Image 1: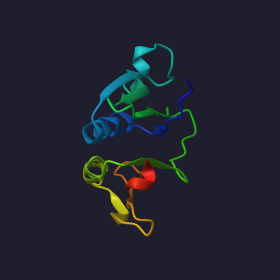
Image 2 (image 1 turned 90 degrees about the horizontal axis):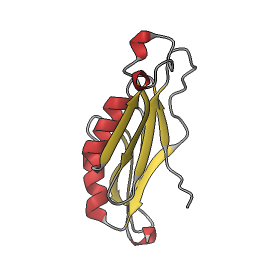
Image 3 (image 1 turned 180 degrees about the vertical axis):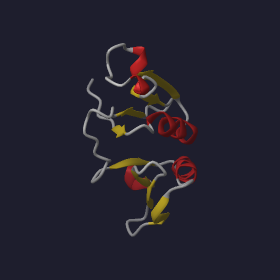
Image 4 (image 1 turned 135 degrees about the horizontal axis):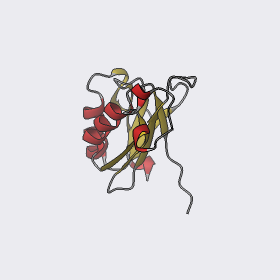
Length: 138
């Protein structure tokens, strides 16, 4: 089986972001630091940065992230949104409510012209999210 899932790059915020996403979405969070793999970073001060993290929820959501060490070029996420969609409006709204804490809301979660509930935001870590709940998601 092949799986497609988001992998988000951060510059020093990966652990805080993934812990925030775990609080919002639930699930099991696994974190491996550069210090866990000796020789992976040039700067000893970066040992606690996240080399790889994975959040897996009981419902099958998978979100991965890492920090970009200083000796690599870093580009903040742009032009891509993490999309959370489904038929369970209460579940999607609960995620919206939690992820909107400290976010910039670009479109309030509410009725969309196609009949679903829809909203967009940029979370406190600069990641764009889209939320869609309704029967067209079935």
